[in-house]
Length: 422
Image (cartoon, rainbow, N blue to C red; front, side):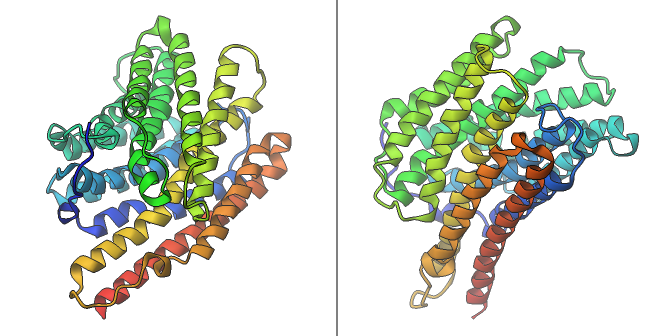
């Protein structure tokens, strides 16, 4: 496979739509931090406690999914030279529908005023609408994506596992909401839902996007062809095995091994980066270590080497916070100023003075914010030691770092508006 000669920035969508998906993410994740600190504690930190499930679904549905969908809106035209739907209203509906579905799930999982069944039904209906909207917005463009490198390979196929995640989630919510859905085994649906979400969708998407963005922004060696093709294929193949009930254990073990090998290879590449003083570099290192450690814990749990309610929480924090959300934060700090710089250069007269990215978002502030996030990660991992106390400290700390990031990004947009108006 050869690399694309040029990036089609002229095909980039209206920045307002992309910013609408990306910029609210830190403030919405701050809400998760406050919910961790002050939400109902019954059964926490057990993985099936209402608080733990509510936090996971809020972070994935309300925070990560809109960011990923917004990134696809930008990457499909720029990297693959393929436009998504021309319907502005459809693109604008994606993020709010994610937020509404996540809010319904939090209501259901928290059992407010005995409305769990109604809330599950509402979540199933909203999830179905979200599934249809994803298909409408992205699928017509996918057949035109050329398989040039790992990023375009991922862009072409990544909506498929996302649809599997949404279908499994809608079916489970429909069962709990007493809707007329097929009576499938909940345990089987849960394994398909979790495996497809964490590995086939999130891990594959991160590997695909990072193959382009990390070498570009942090000057690491570009991944080889074997890396670009083997790991996404292995993630998707093992996810398909989850659909066979008798093979689910083998599929989970294979997933864990694939993730460990991919994370270790990624860490070796990151250690060769030339821009190690960049704020996002620390977060990417933690992400690689988080995926490796989290997958090792899952592997040990599946093999019976670890027991107890604390380990699933630790594995979840390592994968979802360290492995997913920290690199998303690193990319937001890079991509938002980059998009602002790009659109200013396209819109302002040729001789206009455009501030560099480092002035749009000061590196020193971003570095301190990244260090603060790393500290809150340690607090999140330590919660099982004293759940009542540490969940308040960790939740409040996580919310504070996310509000800090949100303010930094909003300041970038304020400068964007100010420069446009000048």
